[in-house]
Length: 338
Ligand SMILES: Nc1ncnc2c1ncn2[C@@H]1O[C@H](COP(=O)(O)OP(=O)(O)OP(=O)(O)O)[C@@H](O)[C@H]1O
Image (cartoon, rainbow, N blue to C red; front, side):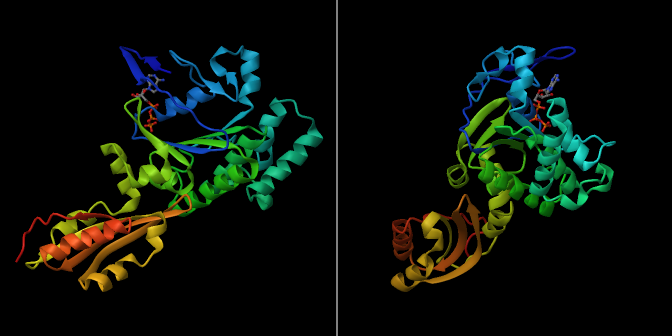
């Protein structure tokens, strides 16, 4: 599909040729920088924006072919949460969550029961009668989530829902979304500019740049083998401090010393490969920096190791480590050898 806005002076092509398929039950993340087209894309899914060309299908229904009445019904199956929560300030927590049910004409008794269930689900049992102004950011987003789930949607859209929250609160909201996905099987589509969000809960990720999806795949695959430059930049947000490699390149090395960058994925991140290598080839290794990350139940990490050895043994080492499934790279040293 395609989306062109008719701005004041000229047309803005917000989305060029987007072709995206999201499986039922997935948590699907779309990441991109500001202006890439993320909000436009997510707003097209529930028809808050209309596509200029193409089709949008949700649960077997072509959304951009529905009458107004059909669309109102279809929208109940697509809940949405927002960066700034969009709560009604004059209504309590309970009344905010009840609002979409009132609009849908649900009987009062049923509303009471459903709202209380949702309040418990999002952990706000004690705050049912509070007003939004009396809540923290995280609590406000919990209200937003409960309200989005009121009509038992099949899909939940999240528009930068954690971007206004501090890191700890972000994590608790992400954990809640994950729990909702697991318990209720709801498909979650989220947009973000933070790789941490993708890493923590998404099964799949698409990278959007200037109105195009430039890379897509299972999160572990994209994290361990990013192809596009922009994807590499996003992955770096979480895998290493931007300046780690730069700093390591500056370390003055003695003659016969090398720095190896070793990348581990999955099983081999949990194996004592380095100690086996050191024992087997009798090399002296000095670990400079290392990190390990967990993505979708799998681990991966990188280690920077300094070794002092001969060229032959260096090659044997690279062979040994590669045979163990470790990707090895000799880090170029900018300072040179002493
Ligand atoms: N209503 C509109 N009218 C005209 N142009 C628009 C409109 N909404 C968005 N755009 C333009 O479309 C492009 C994509 O915007 P969009 O808001 O989808 O990006 P985004 O990735 O969500 O960015 P951000 O994170 O900053 O919100 C931008 O160039 C933006 O200026």
